[in-house]
Length: 308
Image (cartoon, rainbow, N blue to C red; front, side, top):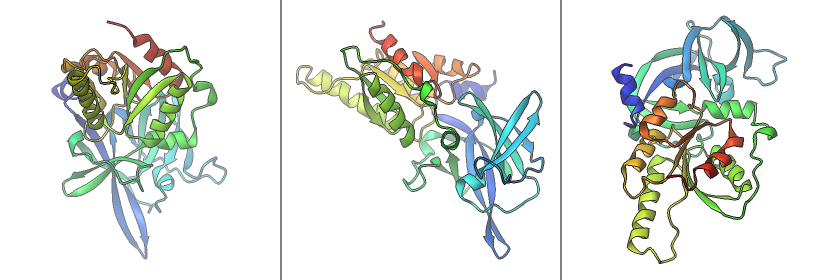
């Protein structure tokens, strides 16, 4: 394991992103590159565009068909079409082969710039007008790079089927979960699923907000334990990729705080794979679930209640 991997797995609030661009056709022969980024952990490889073109019979305009890639058939989506960008044809187009949410998907882009290491502290929360497709903005070498919400793209094209929702029913005791999740869509979905299992959810938009809420609740509880104010949650459920403070770092800071260390923490992310679980264990996560596994979340939360 190299030094970079150690840094990224130990909750230093950093990530590596692949910066790529989509060449926008501005009309009258004018073009401009739009810079985007995606977490390196989601990218398996980058290949040349084999000459894909839009399909008239495609189930969605952004679907470009499939290509053989070793032992699999890879579906490829046109990022520009999904983003509503008029893409100009360019030499050197690439397909980013990604793996997350237990799915392998290709995304067509105009080209790749380079890989950067950035701190989540430098990633800003996007304006609400673009928040549906962008999870964060960061400035690199004087240009803004938009971190794309690839999960949202796949969800829009193939929503979680009804069979994947929770089946648990209320048991009499209301459990409280603090959820740290930057995606408004995911916040709504997760809280709705947990509510079906009689689990109350306190919503926060990123790791920094979640940590602030937890520390304030701990301070209130210590100052006036019998004041009847809301206490600490029973369990913390957190995404990993979030502006300002990521889920790995949030978990590490919870476990390092004597007032919070007893709280079970569940990492709930598209980045949970067999190859990356060691990162969650390093920071002390009590459980790790991939986002497609909605049906397991309530059961896992309940299983952690009362454990030493």
